Image (cartoon, rainbow over all chains, first blue to last red; front, side):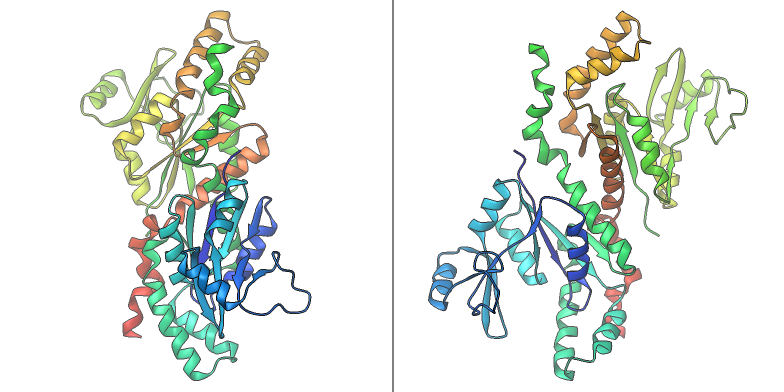
Length: 207
Length: 207
């Protein structure tokens, strides 16, 4: 059984990450999103273990103490984290996991699982284009906009630490590029050689 | 201008390499086959510099002496070689070049241009399947068949030295995998970061 891969997709807020990821995943089999742990209470219809693993703050803090998270962050007053054990189990079952997280989180994940992780950065065509997109949303307060743009500067400066760079200039092309990364990484020789036995290349002598 | 990539596609004889490569290339722009040097006389309609660079044996041997080839080989009494200068020029122009050569040649090429080369191995689903395919062709003499199968053994033992492994079990899937490699390699961060200037990520301060 070939092991799965942890694909971490990241990039500045407003770059169109989520829709690229969803479209790419819908075209392939054997890919699923990671299920996060959270202290946020479940919303109607949300299922524990499917949408999130819902835990109380005490449990979450215990998990932090025990170094059980690949990454975690506080968003709007609630904690969200990715369990190392959960990801390792899925990968060992041969499942490919996709993580849609911020740049800081992405860099933390790869430090803890360098061999299993592929880092993908989705960037805007330019910084001024990102500024325009965020301003056109019209939903951001001026202070929030300034924070997001400052975050983006730092995030864009980290591109070098990622494996792949997708520039979201044309949505269809960006989706196609993400699909190509998903497929190409799976057939890297370094990932499959331990499983070459199934092609019986190494059973030649006995035939 | 982003540099091109040299994609070297290899694998045992009878594995279906050529048709996979042609189909994949027909779907993409900016890809072309390498034009080889040869001592074989031109056939009617063949154009010098397009189909081959036609040279005499003296010139070819001089080029070998001057270490001008990435790889060369004798096939049916004629010499064929890939010029280092030609490949470097094309790559510097931003063209992606595809080389369809044997495993020995592929390993020679990557030694001479490790940074620019991506090595792709196309394998049969199994050794016995390759044997069957070669026998079903019916065109091979028994001695030739034995030579090809022995070559294949050695070739299959070199898979570990390649970057990617495509197993040609289902033609459509194999073509799709080759296209994915072509695309994904082009957006590797290590290849594009020297050109990030054009996205103006590094011109933020001046804005």
